[in-house]
Image (cartoon, rainbow, N blue to C red; front, side):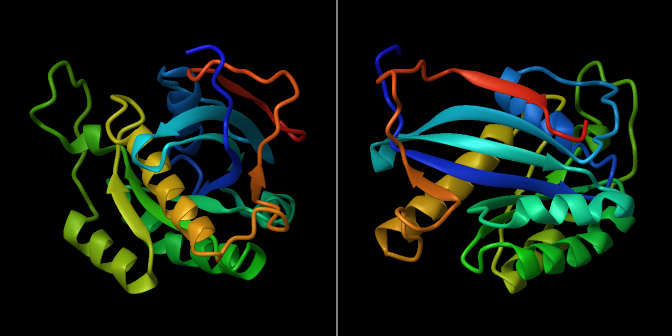
Length: 222
């Protein structure tokens, strides 16, 4: 689909505990592959991807900042929260602690990010507790019920989806749903595309890009 330009650039952050699969979700989005044993994120990593929202008639470029999930890097990662239009708040469905800690990550994001930011709660690693999955070598007990996470997301005004970076299940959907919500906010004037740093009307200098273009690269502190 060469010759197609994008309409908006949207800044996303990906946050949550270490080892919940944030980097794997980003690589699945940008490269359509699975990182079995990713190195811990040191500071931030960056990836970009073009996605199409057909019902909106829009193509958006996602600029995604994958943030470290350890306390020692919080002062660094908080600076990347500022101006973000979207957030993936990630937990591991087989780790109760990661779900519990999502509350403090959400509070951190809300303190430092745009007050109108769209946040989607993502329960990752559903493949680990799916006994019907063919070829699965490891099965773990689910520690966070879908209904519980969905209810908490509803109470906090978050979007919600369960996903698997390994299989790719619902990874694109998570970003698409968040992008739809942001586009709706733009349409309603919640986000000002001239002044909101996380939402930019795009004016690509070369006039065209390929729709399936995706890149992922280390950030400044990796």
